[in-house]
Length: 115
Image (cartoon, rainbow, N blue to C red; front, side, top):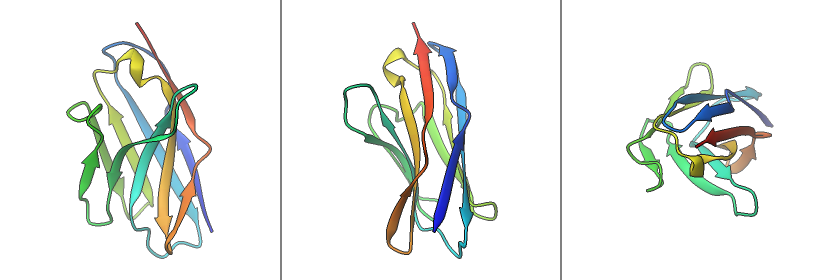
């Protein structure tokens, strides 16, 4: 079992920055990929950024060039640096990890970007 806890969400003005963190705990030997998803009100949950265990990254077109995903394998943590935030980035952001072939999810953290 893997437990994921996100932190770092909040309210920020357009153009500002936030850094999300996600800590994984449990009987963990090796986490494969980790990722951030987001879900805006009335919309489906969508992938934002993904990082493999060797550091390869992938971003959605909507955040490419503005967001940076990173991870600390020793601490089983993943981060999302969000720059040049836009009102359309407003959503609940979820951390996800794939371990033992199974996906795990955090409880989510709210990010609100005011115009």
